[in-house]
Length: 108
Image 1 (tube, rainbow, N blue to C red):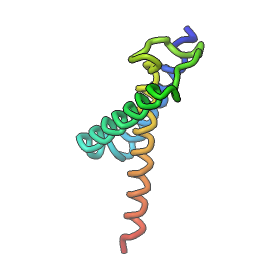
Image 2: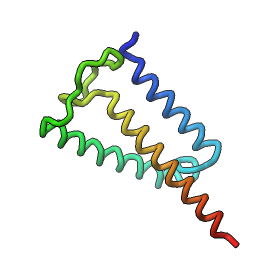
Image 3: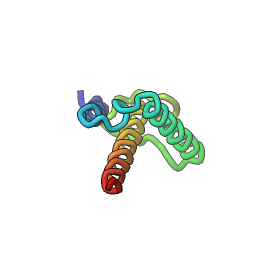
Image 4: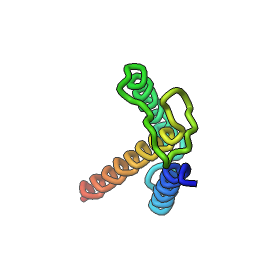
């Protein structure tokens, strides 16, 4: 059961961000196509970064009791995909929130 804790924490966090987005219509719930394309593009960039790091021997999975043990590729755990989604989504929400705030300040 402990092997699912990290994945569960990531999913709960993604759920919280989704509720925040839904409530305030910040990204996905404001402009779904644009936001989802941005999220997917960000995840792809970070997966390429991970692949380069793994290939160079910089990144490795290690041994963690809180992970599922499912690998998407050598040294690339399933949880990494959800972590990257969380990272990119959170950054997008922050960026859009700051952008809205700036726009409100600039209005006469």
